[in-house]
Each structure stands twice: as C-alpha cells, then as structure tokens.
Length: 128
Length: 304
Image (cartoon, rainbow over all chains, first blue to last red):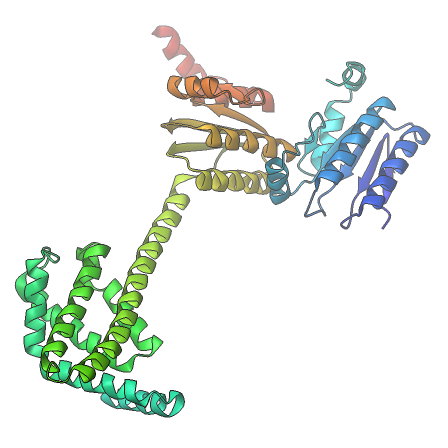
C-alpha cells in the first residue's frame, strides 16, 4: 500500500490511509527523503489520523524520517494522532521526542505558516 | 410456589437419578417446616445472644426472621442454582444487608444451619445411619446456600462500590473551557492510578473535541502525590503534546513539590506555574490573548 505524497506549495503532505507494514513504512521514508530534495520543500506533514495503532517500529521510523528531513534542510510535523493512540504511545515510552505535533492537518499547516518567518532560524539552530 | 417446587423435584428425580438424596432432602425439609416456629425462635435467640443483629428491634427481627427462614427452607428444598441465588439476592439487597456487615450476615446464616442441624440430629438420634445420611444431605444443601449467600453479599458490595466510583469519577474531573482553545481542569482529592488514567483519557478526548491548544491542570486540591501518579502526570503532558496541545500544571503545594524532588521524578517536561491565575495568564499570553482592564475598574484600582 503506497502512501500518497502531495505537494502543496512549499510543503509535502503524506497522508497515511491504512495500517502500514514495515516495508511500506521504509518505502514512505525513502520517498519522502527523496522528494523533499526534488521539490525543494520546506516542510513535510505526515498525517497519521487513520492509524489506530503506533508501535515502536513506526515511531522509530517516523523519528528517523524527521531527522533525515532535518538534515535535508526541511522540517517535519506529525499530525492527527488519535487520543487512544497517544495514550498507548506514552505508556510504551514512545513520545516522538523533538518532533513537532499538531491536532490535525489544519493545525499543522497553521503551525508551519506561523513559523514561516523564523523557520530558517529554527532549522539553523540544529536539533533545538 | 409449592407446585413449582414439586415440579422441580420431579424433574430432578427423573433426570439425575439421585432419588435417595432428594428423598432425604424432602424428609428433612418436611421436618424443618413442621417445627418452623420453634426452630425460628431458637435461631433468633441465638442470633441475639451472639449480638449479630443489634441494629434491628426485636419485632423487626421476628418478622424478618420468618421471611428468611421460609425462604431458606425453600432454597434448601429446591436446591437448584436459581432458587439458591434468588434467596442470596433477596438477602443481600434486603434490610439485613443494610444494617449489618457481611461477616455478621454470614454468621446469621451459618447459625441457621447449625440450629437446623442440631434439631435434625435430635430427631434421628435413634437411627444413626439414617441420621448420618440425612445430615450428609443437609450439609451439602446448606453449604450450597451459604456459599451462594456469601457470594451474593460480596457481589452486592462490589456493585455498590463500583456505582459509587463511577459517580465520583463523573463528578471529580470536570474539564472546563475558559477561552477558545484553553481548557482548565481542576483536580482535587486523592489520585489513584485508575483515576489518573481516567483523567488522562478525559483530557485527550477533550483536546480532540474542543481543539484546545493549552490545558491548565490545577492540582491545588490534591493532598499527596507518589511516584506512580507523578509519572502519570508526565505521561498526560506527553500524550497531550502528541495531540498538539501544551499542558501547564498549577498549584503544586510545597509538600508535593518536596516529595516530587525527593523521589526524583523527571519533571523537566512539565511546565509549572504557581497558581491557577498565573497559569491562565501564561496560557493567554501563549494563545495571544491580552486581558485589559476597563476604565472604570482601572480608576477604582488607581484610587485605592
């Protein structure tokens, strides 16, 4: 199951639509890291609202994606984590440290727009 | 009732072929029915002697004892699960259950068995083998009833506790919206792991439904906190962040602050402000609100 990646201005939006297996996740990682350079995108939004489970592998892969994309000069935000998913994630100690999160796609776009002015500075201050 | 019992016995006779046992039961039940008045009085006397039923007046206990005695004998006779459970349920929800503790109520039922057993023993003492068989049958039946009563009482207590807990849960964690995208959640009382979990779930759902960006959790009313609860609070903060909301914790008492530092909970992720007012002010700053005094009040304040 391939995850559609849409280009929206200077952002890339990846909307996960069904549960992904490990190789799907790695594929998503590779294509995001590649496309962020091709499209010269400033930010990547990963929408996980359709997921009703997040295991350690998917959390680690998402963290990896965020780190790689930071190295490629853009930022990553994860949006749409469900309340139950969030709860079980923190119980497992998977807190997506250092990756910005937002309630849904709309909030995520707003967050990125608000950070537009100082986005370069934030990315410049490596790892925040 | 008598008909139903007779029918129940007939089916049991044909189905399980325990004819001797059921005959014995029928025999002893007839005996208990025949001597119901004196046995009941003996029972009430011994209950009073053992001070098991101090809350009820004498006439009350006589009336109740008549009902309970008859139901007890019926339950012995029918022997089916349903009849026994019915008896246990009436006992557990009836007047006795509200006046006495579980152990005393069980004592009362066990005394009833004892009184009946003694009377049966006296009656059949001339024929030892018959007496033994009768008592065996009686013990089996009366044990079944006692167990059902014990279970019935425990279930009733558990049900009561559960209901009260639910009521408390509902009452004790209101999530209040004070501004657009700003929620406050005052917590008071004792937080146990179950409640902490409920609170977290409550907050996460509220964030989703109100699209809140900031939640102020006020714990002024919380008396004490241990490692488990503190960690739960940290988890709440982290889970809220995953939904894109920040949490501000206010009203940590000096004692709680000391405990938290002493037990070494990692609170670096927690954003704390002294009191609820300060917390709301900080949240408003974060959300871009600015509260301005109206002129009149401003003048009053200046005059003071």
